[in-house]
Image (cartoon, rainbow, N blue to C red; front, side):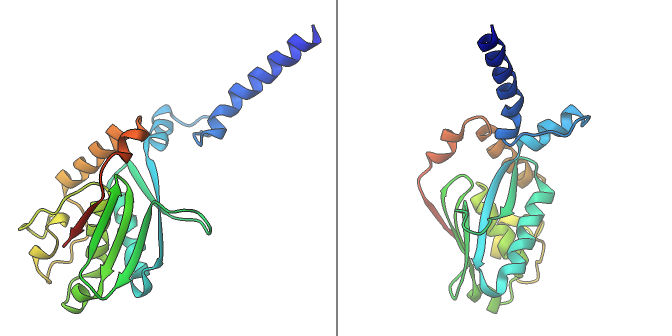
Length: 191
């Protein structure tokens, strides 16, 4: 009798702890929609320790994506944590190597910066590749993924409505199927 009661209590405790263990803890009294939104975002970590003088531009680019979409959230990786995205500075042209949706390496190239391109736009654009967006050249300044074809006067770091919708679609479809996001071959996008 005591074993059955103890087993029942352990089962209840395990069921109650599942949301905490899965990272879906919700504050008591929070509206159901808020809980679903928080659980729906796929958290992607980035390591910008190698981005040198572009660190603040990388952080701002990540913040812009966080303000713009709900399906993915970019966060700095904790010390010792393996990041989904590695961001580096080099003397070449900006580019991204996407290994799978939400994973890869971004280079913030000094060549484009030296030519007058905006660092925050570069960062946001290259992170857009990691989020699954292709270049859309030529294109207007209002399109983040038009990249360098918009010219050096363009400093718009924000995705347009179509770009936001595409990222939401990419991560909405991938939310329930983690294996579906790792089947892509590496893609190097040089802007």
